[in-house]
Image (cartoon, rainbow, N blue to C red; front, side):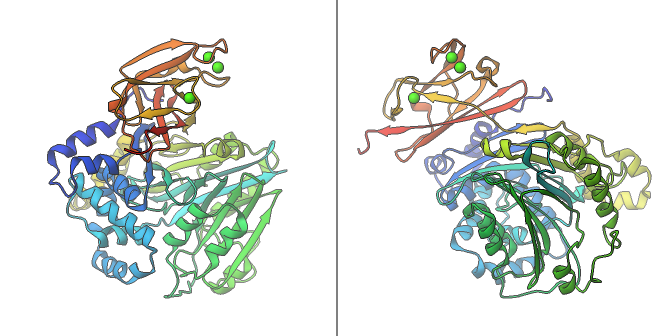
Length: 536
Ligand SMILES: [Ca+2]
Ligand SMILES: [Ca+2]
Ligand SMILES: [Ca+2]
C-alpha cells in the first residue's frame, strides 16, 4: 500500500467545522450527532462508518464526506442541464420515499451545511440520489462446482465517464438503529450505491449491471434507490430479496441483479424489467453480467429479438462473448484471485488508455470474507492497475475543445491523481477487549480515570504491527500504550490507555470501535460497553 498516511480526518474535519460553522446545531449537539462515526483512507478508498438513527446516519454522511459529496452534487445536479428537471422530479417522488430515508436525506443536507457547503438543499440531495445511477458495468457471481472450494465468489467493476464519477471511492459501513449492518460503495451524500455494490451482515452480497431496451415504466412504482436500500437493510435471504425488488417496481433502472447468499451458497440472477423478469438461481454455477439481455422474459418486454442470439450479438455483446470464453476457461477454478483477473480483463473492463469511459474500480469477495464482518478486496482505478493516460488523451483533443471543457478536464485530473491503486482489503477485523479480564466492560462517563483497551494478537494478526499514533477508540486517541501479553496466551498484545473524558460515548452507547493502521492497512475491532451508572 502507499506510504502516504492520511491519518484521521475526523478530528481535522471537526476542528475546521467548529471554526466556520454558523451554528445550525451547537458543538455539543454536533458531537452527539457524530457519535460513533469515523472516516479513514486506504489505498484511494474513503472508508466511512455511520451509525445511529436515520437522521444521524445522514448527518454523519453529509458531514464526513462533504467535499466528495459536493463534487457528486455538482456532477449529478449542479452543472447538469437537467438539474431543474431533476429537482422537480425529486419533489414529485418525495412522497414515495419512506420517512426513514427522507430523514436520512435531510440529515445529509444538515451535515453538508455544518461542514460549510450551505448551497445544497433537500431537493438537490434527493435529485442526485434519484439520478445517481451508473450506466455500464461488468459483474459475475459463481458458486459450488464453478469455484475452487465451493465458496461463492462475486465481483463487480463500474464503467462510466471518470470525469462524472471520479468521486465514487467512498465505501460506507453502516450500523443503523433499525435493520442489518451493511456496506456499500458510492459517492459522498448518497444513501444507496447506484453502481451497485452491497454486502450486509447476514451474508448477502448484491450487485448488478443495468440492461437496456424499450423500457416499460410504472409511474406509481417505488423508486429503485428505495427498493434496493430496503432490500440491503432489511433482507437476509434471496426469496425476500426477489419479492422486494419486483413488488411495486417503477421500471426505472432495468438491471440484471446478481446476489450471493454466503450463508447457504446459493446465487441468483434476477434480470428485472418492469412487469417482466427472469429468475435463475443455483448452488452450482456461474452468472456473468455485462449490460447484456441474456433472458427471454426481459427481452420480450424490452422488445428485443427473442430468443437471445447465440452467440451473443448486439449491444455489449463483445463483453458477453468474452464472459462465455472466461467461464469456459475458468469453470471450477474461480477464486478471489481469478475474480480480480476477470475484473481486470481489458474487454470486461473496457480498458482504453486514452478513453474516459472505462472500468474505474474493482470489488471482489467470497463466502469466507463476507462472513468475516463483510470483508472484501477493492481496487480504486483500473482493476488491472493500468493507468488512464491523460496526456495522450488531451493530445487527441482540439485546442478549442480543451479551452471549452476545463471543468471536465479538471475532474479527469482528480481521477488521475488518485489512480491507479493496488488491490486492498476493506477492512481487516481484529479482536479487541475493552477492560481486559472484565466481562461487563462498565464505563462511568464521569470518571477521570483511564479506560484500557487491548488489541489482541491472533493466528492471522500481530497486534504489535498497529501504529499507536493512528489509533482512535470511540473518538479518542490513546494517551499511553504498552506491548504485553494481556490475555496470558503467550503472545504479545497491544494495550492502549484512553482518558475516559476523551471518549465520544453517551449513556445509550452499547458498543465501541477501535481503528488503527498497520503496514497493510487499517484494522477495525468492536466490543461491547456498559455505561454506568444507568441513571443519573
Ligand atoms: Ca472486557
Ligand atoms: Ca493471542
Ligand atoms: Ca496474548
